[in-house]
Image (cartoon, rainbow, N blue to C red):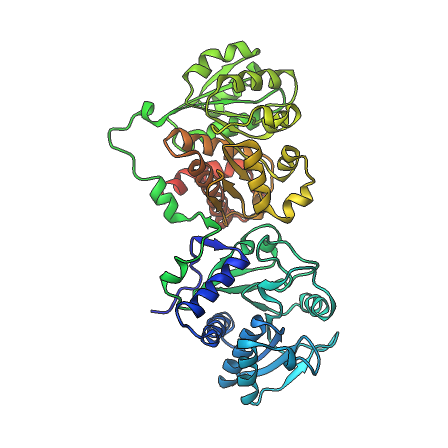
Length: 503
């Protein structure tokens, strides 16, 4: 049976950890480095042939490191199959003198096959039907400059299909940030370990379809190197959400209180409440402005809706709640402030979103830091929590969420492309979801999902990461049916039971 390279592992690594895996395989397990390079070139070439089976001409853009060596191997494989090969190297006539190790070995092997090499000049034609990007790899430490920048920009303007080897050139493998300029690939084939930056931030616009090959490394190699993050997947859903006991009743599935919906923002609280119900919480109470009670009774009659005008009216509801979701449509006025102050004093498990986060920023998060909450900021809210520019946080989302968790305690979700979740111990990434989710109300739905999962017995960090995953998969399901553009938050609610139950 052929290897399924579309199936990604759960483990994610930094560039340095990936290099450590490579060194461990070579030094401790005796696998020759050139053998690994040949396997990498072969794995990428298999994907190339699967995606472009009628390929007649191939251009390979190669740098002077191991990434270029992988390209040299692909050039040999292409020629042996009768494909017309154009190899373009970033450098000059002294290019070969700067090659070392396995890259040099691959270079000599390629020249033995009588493959001609050209050196990149701005504007020179790329004659291939497809272009292989084997220029810069994971070792890039600063902004792309010189001929590499020119080649990347020319490639992106060319409109030609691109396969990137290991990582699109110009992309930071640790953060997913574009370092000046980066190749926009149709697909990327990565090796040994999935680099965490391939799945978040700007990478989602550059990687295309991601493939993975472990190059036949034994499992013992992976036991020698720590993992930086984990990708939440379908198997996690199956583990964390097993079938309910046949004797279950509404009391065993928890009581959630949702507080929000100031004047003019009642829909946010209603969406959170409906999402909580569709995710399986046993008993749900919605505390909102009295003006919104009729709409709630029509929209979600299963939810016990209470109209409240003062924080004192929350008391009996706070006492009965197992988990409180606060923030959707809460507002930052006197009503919202009074509600949040009373909730924070109750010392109950909290899911904190939207305006509740903004109020906590105003009051000083250090006053309220606790282990018994889940915070769900988008980058703007995260920037306010840390008093840092959003652009700085987005440049390294992995560092940003670690800072957030240290400052706030508990479990933290950093929303965005490749949403992250951590409790300060383990770090999780969700690679599901789509641009259709960039509309109002999505965060309100997410907060209700997380509250419902938490109240059903999941650990806070598991409720957070599984909530993010289910939310994203529901959006992908909706996109499959109707497309991304025009998707609204309530579309996800209808899809939730199917996603949760694996239907």
